[in-house]
Amino acid sequence: MSLRIFIPRDSGALAVGADEVAAALLAQAHARELPVDLVRPGSRGLYWLEPMLEVDTPDGRVAYGPVSPADVPALLDAIVAGEPHPLRQGLTEQIPWLKRQTRLTFARCGIVDPRSIDDYRAHGGYRGLERALKMSSDAIIDDVVKSGLRGRGGAGFPTGTKWRTVAQAGRGQKYICCNADEGDSGTFADRMLMEGDPFMIIEGMTIAGIAVGATKGYIYIRSEYPHAVEAMNAAIEAARRTGYLGEHICHSTDSFDIEVRVGAGAYICGEETSMLESLEGKRGTVRAKPPLPAHKGLFGRPTVINNVLTFSAVPYILDGGAQAYADCGMGRSRGTKPIQLGGNIKHGGLFEVAFGITLGELVDDIGGGTLSGRPVRAVQVGGPLGAYFPRALFDTPFDYEAFAARSGMVGHGGVVVFDDTVDMAKQARFAMEFCAHESCGKCTPCRIGSTRGAETVDKIIAGDKPAANIAVLEDLCNTMKFGSLCALGGLTPIPVLSALTHFPEDFGLAPRRLQAAE
Image 1 (cartoon, rainbow, N blue to C red):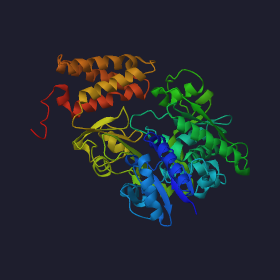
Image 2 (image 1 turned 180 degrees about the vertical axis):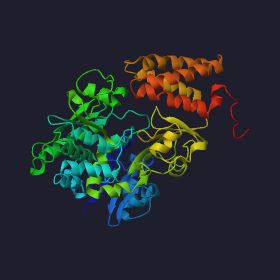
Image 3 (image 1 turned 90 degrees about the horizontal axis):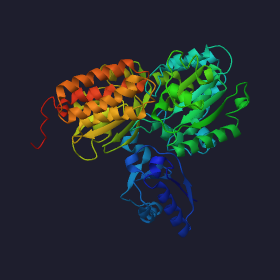
Image 4 (image 1 turned 90 degrees about the vertical axis):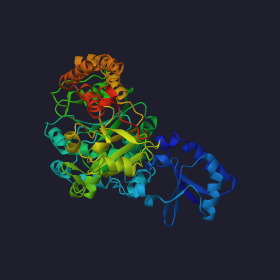
């Protein structure tokens, strides 16, 4: 009987040597004439344990990590003999960091073989689509509305409302566009899902197509994600071969197909109208709204644009039930949120949990504090345009409205941790510099304001009339916030003003706080 072993093919695992561990394992197994069935799934998201090797046992999978090629001979000895090993983490599902999660979107990630549609179906895949094919358009959209699902890309717009708008936009060609241009610093959930469970994205997009009357979908992936592009293309081909994409899906009257388009790496193409321009073969610049893409989107036709995580939530809603999804969360933030813990943190990775968990629980309890062992000073939530939160705000629950009430945003769920060595004036300058570099140049507040902003922060850091230049900076931020054409220029003031509000000493407005040893 062969030994069934799992080693991730996820980019995060490959970056720390998963392929080398897999090669060492196969070489050792060959030398020992030991039959091994090696499976390459996605990652479970426990990145501090990658490369994480799992062994199938009668009690469930047992995890070992982080494994290096040099560990493989002794590890194989222990596995075959059933003996302890220092890298043994126990049953994977019982690892506290994993056990504490509520995995609806990432339920299969790290478990199934992302190249096998049979494996996907064996773990409950396509049950949502099969139910949707028996429902009317209105009934599908009603389920999405009842679930309370909001766009997971950052804006948090009600998904069902968007779908209903496109469904009611008359007849003719319509499109489904999946925004997989995941450009926020500290985020990787879209990539993990595309590499670990690509069929779920396809299923969610297909359900959306049936609901609104669209027959064609595009998934727009950033060029920095070559493994995700490969995984999605392989899954699309498999779905076509088995009748889940193409003409008459599953012998029904509905047809839908998907094409992968690869962007060139511009951050602005994560903005929906810039993405549409890029999909049409043009330079990625922002379109003025209205008209909304739901009325006049790709090639001038009604278009649903959602993020990878939004589409991926839909199969569970159609299969598990809208009410079951809505039962998770708090307030108007329903369901679960895949949160990405990164930066200077001890336990970085993907943590999916119902809305409502506090920022402090995520950073201190789940993440284990900083990797450096120094005190946490600031946390940026929501990507490079998100607010910096000090420890005093760690009681903020992960909820769209709670973050907005404190001048922040949930965004795509990225949480980046900084210890007490961070200079927040330099972080404010970085926000302006980032905007200047990534601006499409179409509107003046973003194009010029960001450059003037970086220059002004430089003057403050140099001690050149700090009080007067801070007033200029605040005025500039207001101009960008209310005068920019899209979220890039409009949200760049958030990290700048939050740094200024919560860490004024770094801008020369007050004495720097004493260090613990002082």
